[in-house]
Each structure stands twice: as structure tokens, then as C-alpha cells.
Length: 140
Image (cartoon, rainbow, N blue to C red; front, side, top):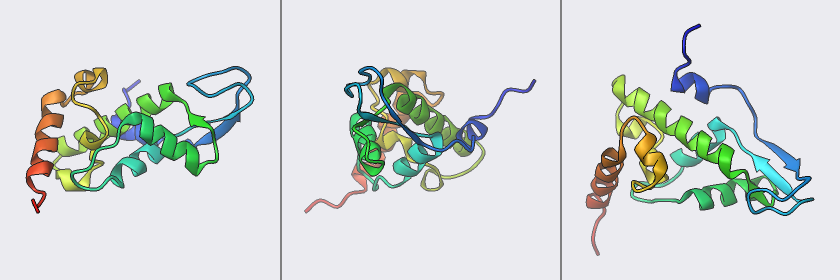
């Protein structure tokens, strides 16, 4: 069986869901609502981060949870979905798309994080993209 591409993993068709926790998880108390997002939702969130901006994964989870009326979002699945969106974007860049055409994952992946070290593009690419966007900002 052929291995799925990152783009195929991104386009699973899976929808976000909110579950009531039976036990405390990801900092959300038992009985509360927890969001289990989706790769496409995380990709859309990343695409909405403005040029030169950065958002850490804790804020990404909090923002998405708030959109769904949940007390928090699953950190494990969100981290997996950030990786899927990142690798899918890198895959597309390798196929000729420009940075402006893909999800700007360098705005949400900390170049010093464990995730950055796992990505095919490597942490240096993330640093380069962040520096490039910061150079493009006008100084007042």
C-alpha cells in the first residue's frame, strides 16, 4: 500500500469535534468540554496569521477552543495537526508553490522546538522565513 502524502493526511475529511471529558486532560478539568480539532482547521488558522506575525501553539489551541465553546483543545492532536499542515505546505513548496501560496507554518512552529527538528524543512528554514518576513516590515 502506497504511503499517504502530507496533503492527503491534511485532506482527511475529518471535522473538529467537542467532547466532554471524563477525566482531566490537557489542562482541562473533568466534566469540561475539550476540542479535538482537525488538520484542515489548523491549516486554515495558520493561513490567517498575518505576515510577520507569530502565534505559539498554546494560543492556537486556546483560540480554536474558544471558537467551539470548549474549555481547551487537545494538545497532542493539535501538535500532530500543526505538523501535518507544516509538512503539507513544505511538500507543496517542493512542488513549485511559493511561500505566499502555502500555509505559513513558520509563523506557528518555534524554530527551537522539538517539532521544528522533526520537520523535513528543518529549523533553519523556519528561522530564515521569520527573518525574511521581519525584514519586510516597515520601521516607524
